[in-house]
Length: 328
Image (spheres, rainbow, N blue to C red):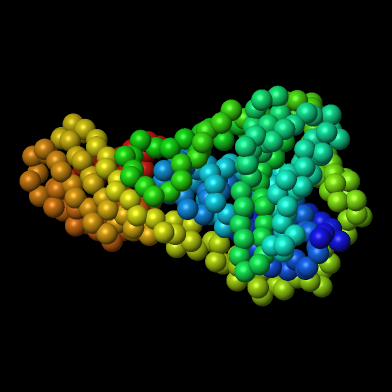
């Protein structure tokens, strides 16, 4: 039974740090306590625990625009975060987990702002029939959290831009995101800001649980643990290589011939690659296949391998442009 509610408003916008804070708070929550963590990420795509990043996100475009890719602990689909987006996490011990009550906090916050909202299925919250919040869940060793997004005044153009998958033919084990019609709450409540939403969430929390909220005290933090968690969330192996195995196949016609590149990728690294081509240079297929084997499956590293090939300069440049273009 919840006897104490604690709020923590995040102070930074770096995604790996924020995910570290989320994990820390989950394991810091005490019996009978609920911690509400409100936080924001700068331009970031956050994928679910079991998703394939190449399938869910236009990585090249995101990175070109200075964005970040992060993988969270909880499942579900890919989401886009920016400073018009407010993220929430309810942390409790397992016996105190009550999803419907936690979701009712969000519905009540919307009600306080004069916005009619409703639950759709298990994961989504709608306003006027359009999605403004997706939820996901995680539990471990008797601790649990329920987290999600609140679209307040996010850049919906970027949301569609970065979450659109490339045309690579991927056969993946990840969970596909459901592209839903979405709405910013500021569209329904002109002038609404993230700060307004934070205040409404705190008031709603106190109303639903009939308790005054406390602030998470500085003495409860362990900086060394936070730094280690942040390092873990920023690791290549966590973001790109977590239980992923897929085959990618893509084709491009150049003035000098057509190339089809097939790759077996596991843990974000090309285990095997095979290039098929009708180019006049009979060695191109073998050279390209051998060069890419063992390379990380990201455009800049693929291009780096290609630039070392003993091929004509124009061929090298066109191959590099191919693997780094927006949709290959």
